[in-house]
Length: 427
Image 1: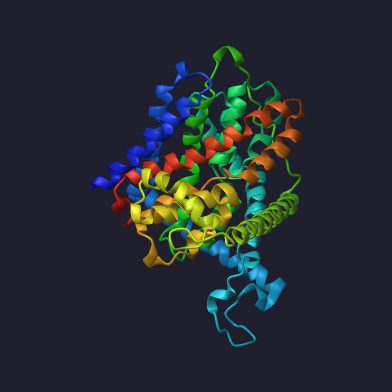
Image 2: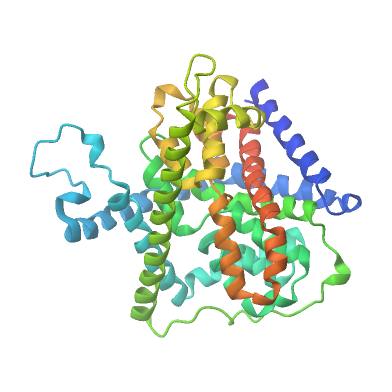
């Protein structure tokens, strides 16, 4: 049933929409129909996926498939790294079983396997059909042209740089609004490879984690489109109709070629993720070391996480998190923005069940499920410089605003989830 705390999420929706409207490049072109349509689409998708028995069963099956994928990945990791992979049969007495979970051996290898499978499914045209189907939906329901619609759909499954690759030949001719939209949506969602990694991190503290992570990434795309259109409204005169050639995309010579190239791409992603985490966590430790030398505030030492928690606690409350969880949730939002969503998910997965309300955990899963962070700013500038070098200066000028849109898009998604009754998710 609808409870008073559900209405709390309306505050977050109103604040986010008002803030984006205030920062819009053309406040007279507020897309009312798109805003209402996007919010309705999000709510309907969540209700359908978790409320309709067949779709709910499908989501549960997805969770089982993810568990099977993780188990299969561990078999490969154990073959290469032996007991270092964290297998139960250790050659020595284990004093701390939790210490067997090593991120480099439990999470990063999943990215390799998923990227290889994604390439294989694309070669078999299965993933291509799914992407084109979502692209058709975005085109018809949200008013996107064919090329941006396909890239938006591809971004949901492939990632913030990989998605636009499918329409590389069209990037130079996109309007400013469409280019901004692609960057913003890329930061609103996550890739298929990282989805499985997040599930691996959360599965012990979040029931049906696979269903939540998959749903979060899919329904954040409409939110990203919505906020992008508010911040940089569409100018129809700048858009010329063009037909999209759906064959202009990645091509593999064979299934083996797809597996090899997919593995190579996955290795690059895994290395980037691992290296980024090392650097950003190290920088955070440096900042905490400096803050630790300052006098305590309110009886406790200062830390980056505590400061971020104080800054973002009001936003966490506004999207539906109870106030007693707001400082922790606010800290997670800040960590996501500054230290990447991977770090935030690791911290969320480390919070004991008794220390966070189940509803808060669900809401934060949706709020964190996006690539909007400082590291992604650099990734987008580098990626678009290769894809469309003639628009590099334009990308640099809008990428920070796109990060802002992507960050708030996942908060919109979390607010929509917060509006719905917890019983829908089994809570």
